[in-house]
Image 1 (cartoon, rainbow, N blue to C red):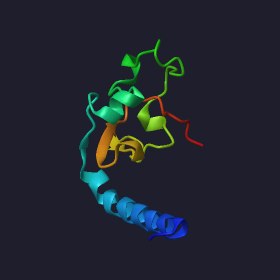
Image 2 (spheres, rainbow, N blue to C red):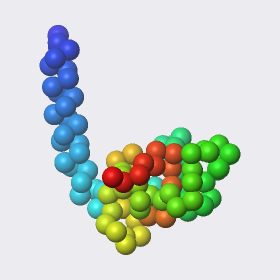
Image 3 (cartoon, rainbow, N blue to C red):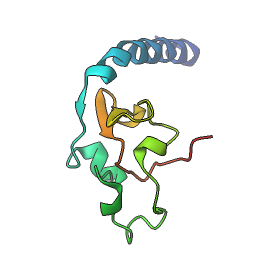
Length: 103
C-alpha cells in the first residue's frame, strides 16, 4: 500500500521526467488544432482576432500567444511550445483564455 507521501513523491518524479522528455517533443511537435479537446476548452484560436469576444470577454486587442507568459517560443518565431498543449505548438499570433501577460 502506497502512502500519500510516497504517492506525492512518485507523482513529482514522474512529472519531472515527463517535462524533461517533452522538451524535445515541444521543439518538434505538430501545431495544435483549434478542434483539439484542450484547445476547444480554452477557446484557442490560431489567429487571436478571431477569438469569441462574447464567450471570452477577457480577450483584449494585442493579446497573442507570442506575448503570453506561458509561450515557450522565441521572439519572432511563428510558433512555439505551450505547457497547456504538451507536445504541440501554438501559433505566436494565436490566443486562448489562459493568456497571461509576460512579466
